Length: 315
Image 1: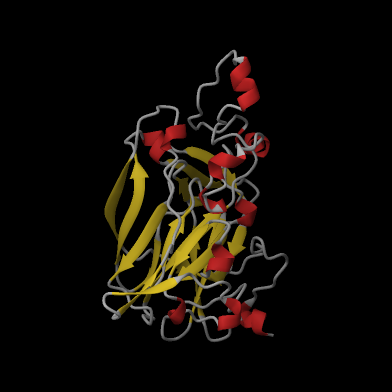
Image 2: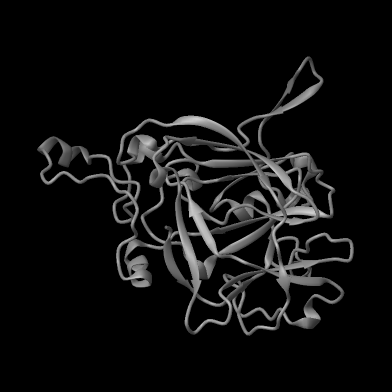
C-alpha cells in the first residue's frame, strides 16, 4: 500500500512543455524545428550533424539517462529495460467554481470570464510516484504533433526536505535508505564516503554527480512539494524524460483515443527501489484536493493557461 499524504485544495493551470520550463524535472525530447516557440525563446540548440549519406540530420545528446542503482540499499544491479504502456484517455469531471488558487502562480484569478468559449474540465491528481535510482523516458508512438483531439499531460512536483516531509505524515518517509555504518574508518572520514541518494543534508562529492544533468541527480527522501506541483501539455512530437527521483503522476492522456508509449529506464526488480508511490488524500479543511484545470477550444485542443505560450504571457 502506498504511503498516504494529505493534499491541500489547489487548482493547477496548464503550461506549455518546453525544455526551459521543464528543466527542473527532466528533459524534453523534440525536433527544435517543430517547436511552437520563436527561435529567441528556444535557448541553446543541440548539436546536429549530417547522417545517412546526407539524407538525415542527427541531433546529439537529446536526453540525459542515469543509472544510480549502485547506490541502492540492496546493491542489486539494474538493467536497461524498454516497456510499452498503452494509456487510455482519462476521465475528467465537469468544471465547478472553486476558491482554490493555482500552485506556483500566486493569486491568479482563473474565473469564468478568463477562458471565454473554451470548455473547462477537471482532472483530480490522486497519486504521485517516482523512480529514485533511474531516469524514465516516455516516447509516444503514432501521435501527430498536429493532433488536436488527443494529447497528454505531464504532471510533476519538486521534492520537500526530509524535515518538512515528517510534518506531513508524522514519521520519516518510508523509503529504502542505505545502511549507515556505526563506525567509519579514518580513511572514509577524510575521503567523504559516498552519501545516500536520500540525504538532503549532505552534498555529494563533486566528482560523482557533476557530470549528470541537475534533474538526473539523486533527490532526497522527502515527499512531493504539493504547493509547487505543475502540469504541462505535450504533443505527439514530444517525448519526456523524468529525472531520477522526480515525483510525477502516472501518464495522463487527454482526448479521444489511447496513446502507446515506449518507456525506457533501468530496473533491478526490487519493488521499493524501482518505484515509490504517494497516495494523495484531500485534507479535512480542503475543498477538493489537487486538481488540474483542462481548458480546451471547440476543436478539442487543450489550451495553455500559464507560463510561456499562454494568453496572459502575451499581454
